[in-house]
Image (cartoon, rainbow, N blue to C red; front, side):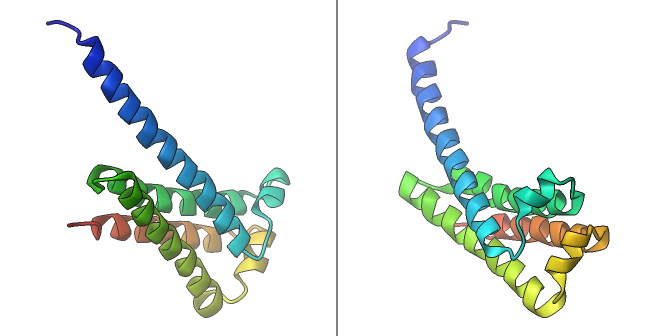
Length: 138
C-alpha cells in the first residue's frame, strides 16, 4: 500500500478549510448567542456559575450538530455558511421563545444557579440542534 502524498495534501487542504470554516461559524455563533442572552455568560462562568456554563455549552452543542451535518451536505462553502446561519438563527430564536413564553424569569434562574432551568434549556438546545440537522436534506 503506497502513501499518496498529493492525495493527502489535497485532502488536508479541504479538511483545514472545512474545519476552519466550522470553527469560525462556531465562534461567531457563540458571540451572537451571548449577545442575545440577558445575562453575561462569561462573567457568570468565571464566577463559577455552572448553570451558565451548561446552558452555553448546550447551545453550542446544539449549534455544532447541524454545522457538522451541513459540512457533509453542502456542495459549496457559500451553501455551508447559509446552512450554518440558518442553524444559528433557529438556536437563538429557540432561546428567545423559551425566555419569553416558557420560563419568563430564565435570566434570574440562571444567575441564581438553578440547575433545573439550565438542564431544560441545554437539553432543548441540543434537541433543536438534532432536529435542525435531520432537516438538512436535499
